[in-house]
Length: 239
Image 1: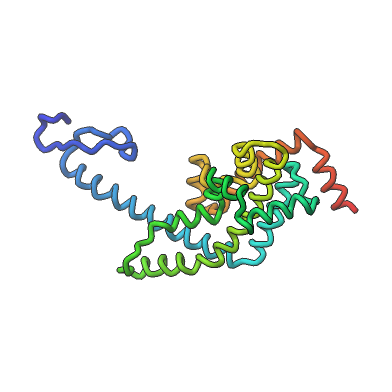
Image 2: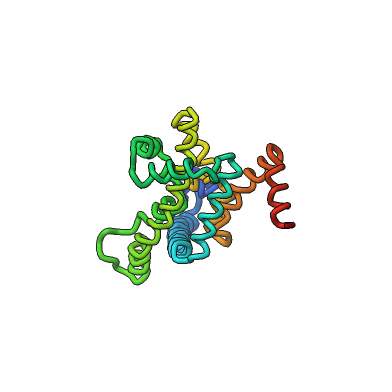
């Protein structure tokens, strides 16, 4: 239709409407579309919230998940050629993290700790209202957010300490702050930066796919750059 056509109205512009964006359609169709669009938005919000609540509660309260996180962080740093077997390297990293020294503060100011798993999941729940919840769903979300605080911080401390150790090592080797943050985010991952496909997948049936999507290219890189590291694992398992 056109703007002169009787009984036609113009739809709002937006990618969610596809080819109908900004077009004139019959009033009845427009009412249905305008009613359906926010409904989809609300459904998406509920799905995202339930997913975030489940992930936030499942991981920090699962001792095996916490243990796997610590081990996988150590293995990732080893693959990145960080000498994690050197007590001086580990000690300086942990010392910076616990003491919040100048190196830690510099790394923090450059965003090193903003994109860990725990930080991203906390941001996913940050929309929870400060006022008293009005529905059962809002009450559950608020409870989950509050419940996640302590175990979430403990889980996040493992991530932050690991990133501090990696970044501190780069600084001690003469690298820049930017290089230190880049390496830590590369090998211990920036969970806020994902492809649209991964983002869609982790909102639906694969909530933990981010780690797999992040680690796979690193494993390929090591296989090409230093295949002897895989030979070490093979010898260890064959022994």
